[in-house]
Image (cartoon, rainbow, N blue to C red; front, top):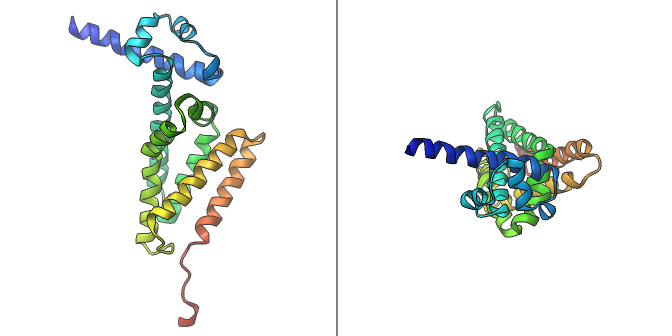
Length: 202
């Protein structure tokens, strides 16, 4: 009996998440009511509050799923690099591609800061994507590829730039063009810190 109950609970939870993913992509968080969500899911308001403590809790669960999937995809892209610079380039390119996708764009970039508040948005985002930036910067410094500025400052520069670029892409009328330009800007930022051979030794 316990297994049946657990399976039903998990099915109910997943139904709410799937419904939330669709509705939060289609509608603004502020205009979507809890009643509409449970009606679309074919469930009760009690089920929503039992599993997520309401609309905001469901939104955060959907938000976290998107961030986790983005982190996984970026990790796969980084692992496919032929060297550290190529790996970083692949990771940034995948991140910017994710930012252009409708569901991530709507839920994470456009609605996330409003629904969760900036502090909570940043906390979750850094938890999933910040570590990728930290490890990339550490690897670039460790291999002597970029100038050894304090890592925490470099992480702030790149994380901040990627965050703001992603927001700008989300608001752009031509997101494909914005993504291409953003990639070029980040490449130039990294290129500007690459350690050049000492010409005096030639």
